[in-house]
Image (cartoon, rainbow, N blue to C red; front, side, top):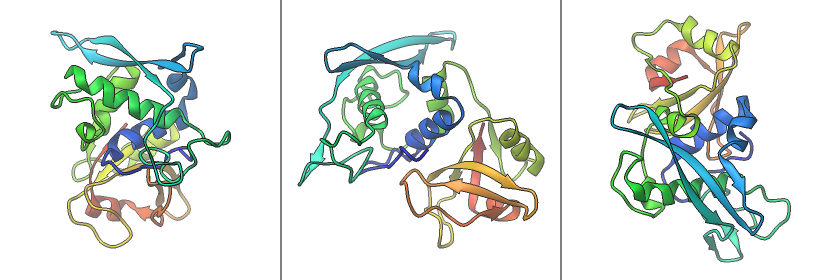
Length: 216
């Protein structure tokens, strides 16, 4: 999760899902990449065939990434040096590949090979596209707290989306990872894909008031 730093495109859903999967199963993320040994990477995403079953697609990307003045990454990895050997690039490369794959139209949105083309989405779709199997969405309004607690304790990747209007400390219409539950305080820990401004731990009631659904 600490590798994820959302940049100047509204793909919080993609980065929150990607980071959550990586935090629980690093091999699942390694499996989508194939290093071609020439500075390019082939990246796999899953679309659906006519019956809804997963079918693998492959796109190839190079290491050239958009930057702003000074050579700092503009999208995923925002603010990090594009040339520093210490800058982790897997998130930025996955994001670039996802934008390129979007051109196929199999991502379920208007086909376009642009970063703007991947603005807005939902985490369960990304889970399928990365893993090749379905995840589950739960409404905070109709789900028992124990369902979320059990998902966290079982080591599942959990993400959630805020409502269109929320109080200070949270971003509206935004995706977060839910990373832990403290039984002593009854509060859940959240991670913001911006890489900063993580909210204070929230109670179940606060989650119900401020979030619409969570995905496991």
